[in-house]
View 1 (tube, rainbow, N blue to C red):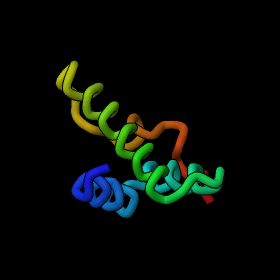
View 2: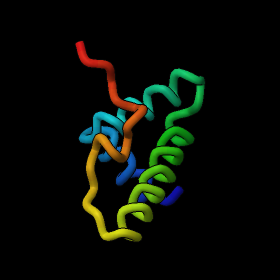
View 3: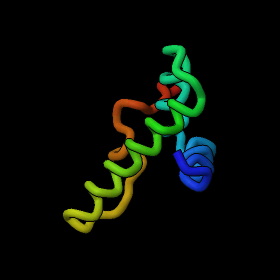
View 4: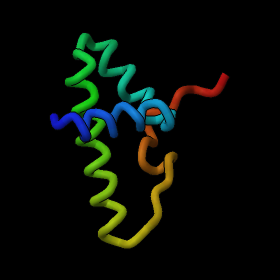
Amino acid sequence: MLKKDRAQAAGVIRFSPGARTYHGRLRARDLGHDAALRQVADRLVGILHGRLEPGTLYDEATAWPHRQEPAA
């Protein structure tokens, strides 16, 4: 992973609850930090591609539907 891509994925896990939860679950499965960041970045590419096709806007709940933290 390029340094720039790693920095972008690391930034996403700071600001996106869904991405942060996804990263945490990957880490809980004994995946290293860099490998987990790569998976987050791959997921983001898929999300972007899915949004560009129909021209729809990004939505956190749609992007990470099964990765949301349960409500307290």
